[in-house]
Amino acid sequence: MSIAQSINHQDRLLTINVNDGEIKNALPGVHVTPCFLDPDNGVWVIRARFDAGTVLPRHFHTGVVHFYTTAGSWHYVEYPEDVQTAGSYLFEPAGSIHTLSTPEGAEGFMIIEGANVNLNDDDSLMFIMDAGWIERTLHAVAQQSGQKMPRYIKPGAAVGFSD
Image 1 (cartoon, helix red, strand yellow):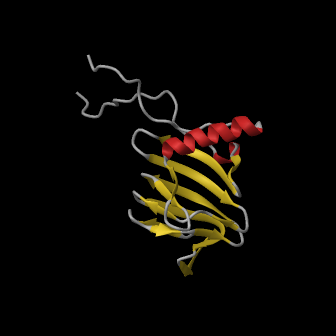
Image 2 (cartoon, rainbow, N blue to C red):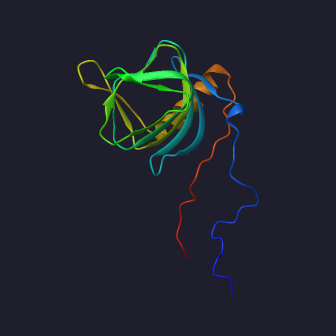
């Protein structure tokens, strides 16, 4: 008898190609390809392209972030000496606060757990960005601007009883 048995049968692999599309200006100057969006568990994996001159709001991370830069360069305003360039991998622990700046433009992949709590200049709440917010926003921007929503992986199962 075999010990290894699949509990999640797949006829095909769950794979996407990030070159098949993106949502342009999901936020001003930010173009996003969703790869994996899991609002139930607060995990979002995206490819993002940032136009030159883009500065995101200062934000607090409730969970960890893994950011792999594939092109261009960027830095956090609070850490100007730590410029991230193509090939850089950055780990951000939960509780990090910073402001992303892309003077020359950049792109990369991010694995984000939890939320970004975006802040105004006076540290008051601007808005909270999490996997659910990203999913709703990408769909809304796609619909409003006539863009095709890229295919992405969305885990989960229908809610119900186990028996």
